[in-house]
Image (cartoon, rainbow, N blue to C red; front, side, top):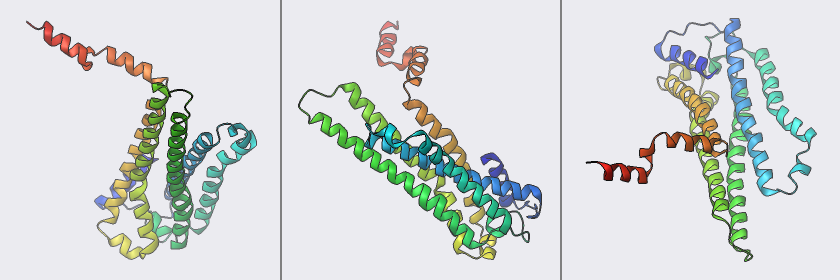
Length: 256
């Protein structure tokens, strides 16, 4: 969907976009693209909430997140996206070309800003920051316990989680900031000024590129954090002994 979004924006930038808004492809594409954005952001919010509960209430985690509650939380993004999709199909304007900022009223764009941005984006960043603070406080409590030193592996695991969370927050921010700008721009400025702006289409195209990068980097960050991936990295490093400083020194000393 992100690649299709890039292709659509490229046609807008180059001036060859002639798809009418009343075509079935346009309606399906735009509704699916906006719904995908909502599901993506709201799912990230659910994951951040799960991580926060696990860190803040580790001994009550299974009591707080029972199977019915997990099922409910997992279905919330889909229900919200489906509801907005039905609403989009009902209020879709066929007058203009196939662009969301021309075919949807401004009040609906504000609705998208509230649920996809205000609730999902801000909520995810807030929960991630709280998770980092609670994890750091737990680590300081362990170090000040006085009953023994915290192992080096525990410290590494703690800071690995902190760095991972910070990277995910940063990638989430940079992946969606241009999309937020385009959505906010469309909600505030009149349609005719948005369409005639030479900057809007380029910002929209860049936001699509950032969306694709998020789909690459966020799973990669999670993969680097998992214990199962580290043995794979070590095996890859063994294929290139020169990566290790000792091996580099040995190679240099063995040179004639």
